[in-house]
Image 1 (tube, rainbow, N blue to C red):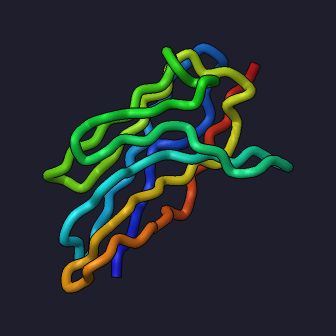
Image 2: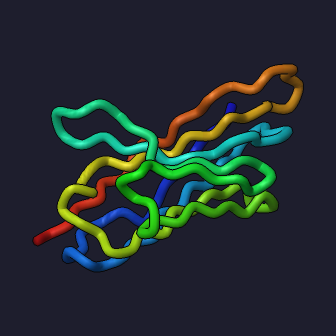
Length: 121
C-alpha cells in the first residue's frame, strides 16, 4: 500500500504565504509525476501545479508567479510554496502522485486526504 500525507494548510491573511508538504510512504519502487490539486466549495477539483521526476513543472494560469512546486525525490516528498495568497485561493488542497509500487509493473495514482487553505481578506 501507498499513503500520501499532507501538511501545512491553515489560515493566512491575504498577501501571506503558506507551504504545503506531501510525503509518500509505503511499498514504493518509483514515483513519476507528483502534483497538487484544489477543490473550492461548489467547484470541481482542478490542477494547481505538477512536477515530473525530472523536475519539469506545469502551473495553472491562476497561480503562475505566486506558487512554486518542488520535490525531494530522496524523501518522496512534494512541496507547494504559496505566496501572495488571495481569497480566491481558498480550497481544500490535495496531493497526487503517480506511483509504481514495489512488485508492480504499472503506475497507479494516489491521493492524499486533503488540507484546508483559508485566506482572510
